[in-house]
Image (cartoon, rainbow, N blue to C red; front, side, top):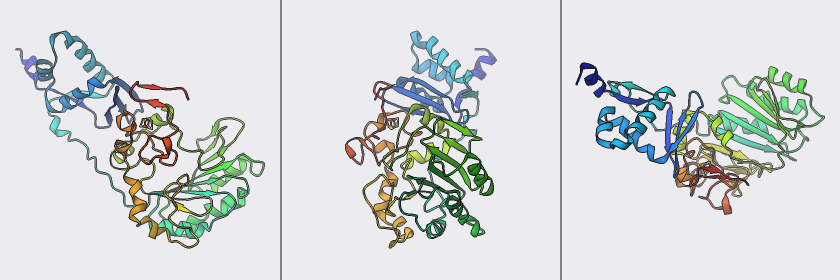
Length: 346
Ligand code: SF4
């Protein structure tokens, strides 16, 4: 053995911490959260990612790879290094595993508020959400009844009434209508930067203005038009945080509180179970209700079919629209088959 061979024999193949490896029934997903690139391998390769952490590469070659498979294994290792998914290192202990515990300072992290025929008391809602350190709001309008600029402005101005409000961003979803022009929306965002994005659904075309105003052909007629899961939507979610949160909690409902178009307080507006109406119930009481919080902990590992899917920690969930309406069944609007590794036609 030469000196160089001896050096090589000590080296580990370190897979970067931001590259997430998930084993599915048919495929293993290697997802680089920094670049957003996804690679699919046979599920049989998953074991090697565990071995890389424990043993030097030469040891793995010697003990785990038979002579016929050595060339294939070398190609696999070369692929990982050339794809910037890992690097050869002598001291892997200097790179401890990342902490997969998840927590948040917010009692409620995000909220959906639906509006149709009733204009809610937004000042009261914002004040209550602020007490729970809520960070993000999505406000969806199902008609153009309240989408004049002055109404939207009255909502967007509320966070500016207080010095230290917790809300970091608001997204609006409004129908395309003659009430409101593109210039009007741009001026609104300029005046109230807390509005991160305005989605204008039922538009003539799909287009974006500076990533702040998104015109979409897709229509939104009710809270049931939600929870569509596609390959492109999943791979947009390149977040290590989402991966960690999804291992511990539900990727849609965790620390979420929703108010439906009638003022009913729910986990999600599409769900049937109401915990009270905002006219008579405090949001804080609901956020402390143990039954309300139960849904926060339904991970993809508890959901049939999803538990065998390689996308399960980067895929948003939907508990409002599920197969047969069951609590632990797969989202209704997902046509991925993890046992075949294919997206099926609807
Ligand atoms: S099967 Fe489940 S985890 Fe997989 S893509 Fe569909 S919804 Fe996501």
